[in-house]
Length: 272
Image (tube, rainbow, N blue to C red; front, top):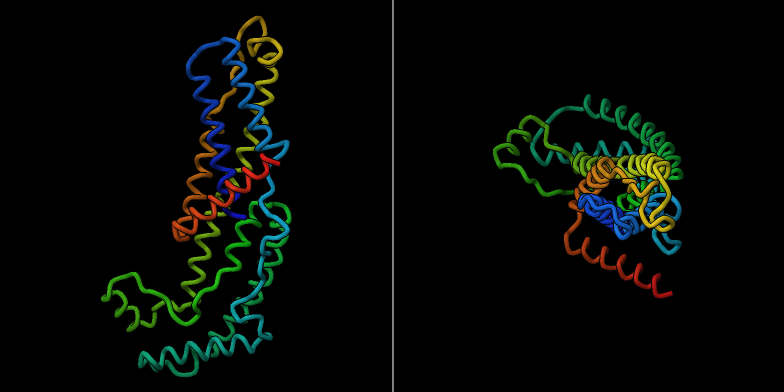
């Protein structure tokens, strides 16, 4: 589903940039007017009248598991604290029992907050198929809960171990997912802004004269009307940057394979 969103953004941006290029030549003949009308119609279909469906019935669904594999309250948190204590002992760090009780209380509160956030997220997904498409991927990721690859220097790692500040696997997983969600939010916001901008510019365009298809020159008295693409192109480029950054968390070959699959889907629809 997320790759369909990416392909959609690339397609919408390509049309918007073509529209800008057509208008930049400064000509006002009927051929130019027809090309402008055609691009505006394509953008209308993509952004408003008939946007594609990003999620198919055969696709996976959003997975709603928690950090404790849905273990009963308290029991899951006790297991997480015990795991942290084992990790400390392996690093020869003795912090006593007090931190364990403190961490247990923190984890109980975190799970309560997590449940509230998931309830709110379900409502946001219901209002945005784009958001749900990205969440289908991220909520079905499988991370190794016991280890991760340290990318920093050996010196920094040693210092963090001595200070008991080495991130746990849970910390690393949360950081990874938070970054993905940040770019997901950016994609969603930029697409919503792009639709709003298109609606506004389309009204301006329509009010400036009749269409090129009906008059031979898109405007009244032979004056060509123009569609201001400046803000629209900027928003779609921002969406492209955000979705590319989201894709950057995935192996390039996997992204390429997914986008190729979307192209095949589109070709099959056109042949039907």
